[in-house]
Image 1 (cartoon, one colour):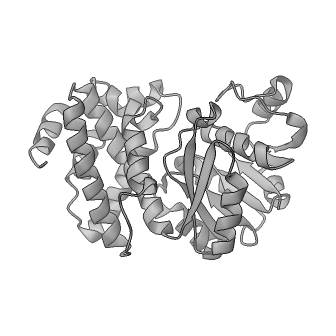
Image 2 (cartoon, rainbow, N blue to C red):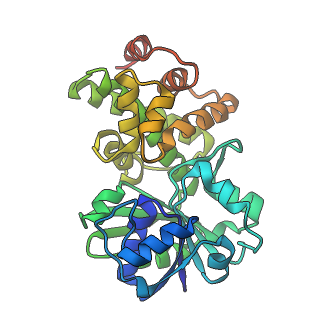
Length: 327
């Protein structure tokens, strides 16, 4: 089955590196033709993960999303969630006969929908043809071939196992799971909580407090996910707690970096302008907040970061008030 990578950022590049090690050739969609030309000339992505070299003879590049969809059987989406609709609006061919893999750890803004639900509702893709990638796996460490773990979530066991095998290399270990909704929400929430971890870091809270913060974050995550998608799940698994830990602590975490800037006194707009990459948690915060208006789950961490990012509340008193709710 022919694989198409969708996106030209760091995560898309990391996934392309993995695919290049397991597939003899593959397709790659990047929106900007000039980015493709630079890639062909230099043999690497000149904007992201520049150390990763590719044999461009094994890659068919496309700047038209319709062409890559036509010529691929499996589409791995690594487009930041705020821009997904913008790319898909150019689509005039059907997706419903393709196998879609969402590597997007975000949620569709305005629609407040998980990526899998969005593909299902608006593009009539059957649930069994939609998979997600989740787990603690930073693009920068993939580039360095440091041992990492990915979980493929899909309601179809055969599709899940096929994709897991396709991504398995000497430095990527894969497993399969079936809690698609829970895994997707966990991927959104861990970015939200990582912003708060960064804010606390910027405010000079120490490691002792961060441990308490993570403990309370995973409990809040569990309350929300168990409410919106009741299921017997182990929240301490790598796809839930593991992903939260690495995103909250890692120097590669763009959400933590964004939060640290807020904690140091940057405005939201200034922090966004200085970031070279999208902090998905900023958009995820608003989406989850609006979704939770229907469920009314007790989420003091979410409420706090929302007040800082969207209501322009000062981080110092907001975090201080939050600390009083922790145990």
